[in-house]
Amino acid sequence: MPKMTFIERDGTRREVDAPLGLSVLEIAHMHGVDIEGACEGSLACSTCHVIVDPAWSKRLAEPTEDEEDMLDLAFGLTETSRLGCQIVITEALDGLVVKLPAGTRNLMGD
Amino acid sequence: MIEAPPRPNRPVYLDNQATTRCDPRVVAAMLPWFTEHYGNPHSVEHVMGTEAEAAVEDARGHVAALVGADAKEIVFTSGATESNNIAIKGAARFALQAGTERRRIVTAATEHKCVLESVADLAAEGFEPVVLPVRPDGLLDPDVLREALAAPTLLVSLMAVNNETGVIQDIAGLATIAKQAGALFHTDIAQATGKIPLDLTGWKVDLASISGHKIYGPKGIGALYVRRRPRVRLVPLFSGGGQERGLRSGTLAAPLIVGLGEACRLAQAEMAQEATRLAGLRDGLLRRLQAVIPGLRVNGSRTARIAGNLNLTFPAVTAADLMARIPDLCVSTGSACSSAAIEPSYVLRALGLDDGAAGRTLRIGIGRFTSPADIDYAAAALEAAHAGAPAPSIEHLAKA
Image (cartoon, one colour):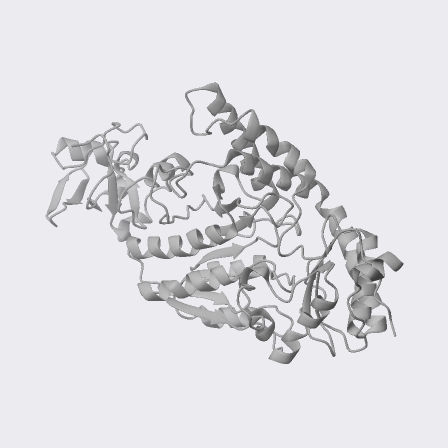
């Protein structure tokens, strides 16, 4: 099974199993990684914002217009920012590394 | 002694690079949005709001069509000065926040003050402004740009048409050079919109600034083009309700936006014919002046130039004296945008004019509402004023 690594906000690296066909958001939730995903992957928020390791970002499919529109609203955007719900694991992404951003923008949150 | 021509019934306005008369058709399109349909375009819960929203979106489409963009790429602002500020500062601050190493921002010496000042202000935030010289004809040498881009560059900002000389830069070519170097490309198209064909999408421009009142639309409205594919991101200047995709908070000025949209629609329909007509008037005026004022010089490229503009250095009389002798002729000594400062135009100095020549230079801007009679008056009045004829008095008018 492919693996992927989350770099948490405190810098901790967590390598986890990454089943084929699941999104980075779903994998985070499986393993209790702290990514919100308020809209549950329906491209209606930017709370699953992750920063893809620059070495990996070129290997991902280009973001769609809808994903870009949501990224416009993300906090602390970088050049390799993506939405976790839109990255689906394939064999080619075995070893993917993503970092959690410093904060998210969810006005409904606590 | 050459006598000044009789006074016209009203001032002859040849300063269309400073501002233009709002086209009566534009005013007619705007009026209902002040009086009857005054809804807030963001009030999407009721019909007054949604009809204003629809009018705004309709206008957005007209602006986009004129500049070769998609409607979603148009953000409404208060004018080109605001658009230039958002584009330049917003792009620089986003890049800083996104963690890029690039700090260099390249522009040219003949840019509008608000571009030069925005770029200069960013020096205090750690960016590196580079202001390039232009050739004596006002055009930027592509090799000078290439050289400046040898160091990693964040943003290049170059205007499409100069506000004093009417000189047209090769934006498609310059944008290609900037993109090849990995820089963002912004262009101020305030003086180019509706005057020359624009294809922002095809030219790979990232950001472009548009003004309403230079194209027979209302003052106080403009737009910023922000490329979507690949997405260009900016840090906004205003905090607020997040209107205009978060880039420009504040209630949209629906009547002014409708006016800008109508101005763009008219410009698109009439641009080609209008350019031919204005070039005819302009060339006629120049021929007549050259015949009677030997040594009259045209500043800036004669070929890469919009149809309505003349920038003339007179051989013997200062621009201030000429204007004082012809109070009925509205022309300017430089750009209105910096006319609060009593100093020779920095644009003309960048073209190599000394202070004396710059002080004898007039900008003449012929526009949609200029008639052949206006040109006749201007030619006769300038000839007489240059020959030393005093301004005609009211009594002179009564006698005639």
